[in-house]
Every structure is written in C-alpha cells, then in structure tokens.
View (cartoon, rainbow, N blue to C red):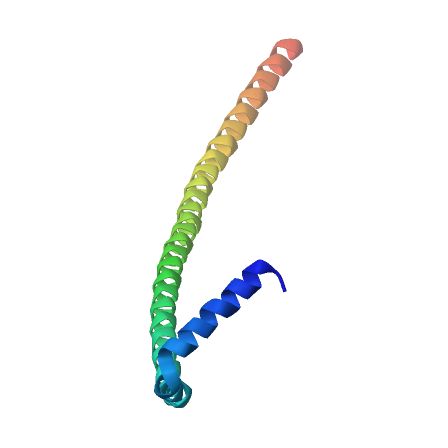
Length: 124
C-alpha cells in the first residue's frame, strides 16, 4: 500500500471514529431511506430537462417547416410566373406567324407582278 492510499484510509478512519456508533447507525440506516428521494429528485430534474429539450426541438422543427413552406411557395410562384411567360411567348409567336404569312403573301404577289411584267415585255 502506497502513502496516498494509507493517508486516505487514515482520513476515513478518523471520520468514522468522529461519527461514533450512533452516527454510523444513522448513516447506515438513513442512506436507504434517503436514496428513493434522491432518485425521485433526479428523475424529476431529468424529466424537466427532457421536456425543455423536447419543446426546443418542436420550436426548431416548426421554424424549419415554416422556412421550407416559404421556399415551396417561392418555387410554386416561379412555376406560375413561367406559365405566364410561356403564354406571353405563345401570343408573340402567333402574332409573328401572322406577320410572316402576310409578308410571304405580299412577296408572292410582288413576284407574280414582276413575272407578269417581264413576260409582257418579252412578248412585246
């Protein structure tokens, strides 16, 4: 046995001798009576901490879900805006189609008149 162990044993012997037989009896009989109260106290403390932790978790989850909902709404609005944009492009394409058809008809009439004039000059 080394010196530190001997010193600890000596200190423990002094505490036991200072308590005396009545102190030791109260200590030996009192610990089993006190332990259920200690267990109940620690259980209540742990339950309270778990409830606080659960409430924090719920608050964080609600915050995350709210942010996710806002992101989904933003993406949904992007799709709606894209639909409006596509509808606008469809109108522009229809108008452009009308212009191209009209220009093609006009150029065809112009070519026909030019061909008609050239055929009249070559016949004359």
